[in-house]
Amino acid sequence: MAKTAKNEDIVVSALRARTNFGKLLQRVENEHRSLVIEKRGVPRAILLSIRDYVRLAAPEPEVLTIIGEDSKAKGTDTLSSHQIDNIVRAARQNKIKRR
Image (cartoon, rainbow, N blue to C red; front, top):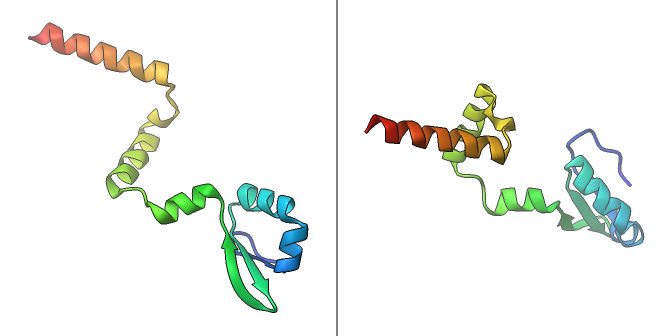
């Protein structure tokens, strides 16, 4: 297996990929890397984690990226769904009182 720097592709032969598939699959997922599978020195396929595949197939709309960054900046990205429900409920009650 070729040595790679962090966040670079892992390159393996088809035979090695077949015999070590479980370990390689785990490594792709844990290290957020792709796996290039070669046959006779020619790249033939790539193995990606499902998360990486979804990012490539359906990139996040820019507005969601902006909202996510804003949420992290405000510290609201760690709120639980219960906490969010309470905030929404309180905001709705305040809106009703102002009418």
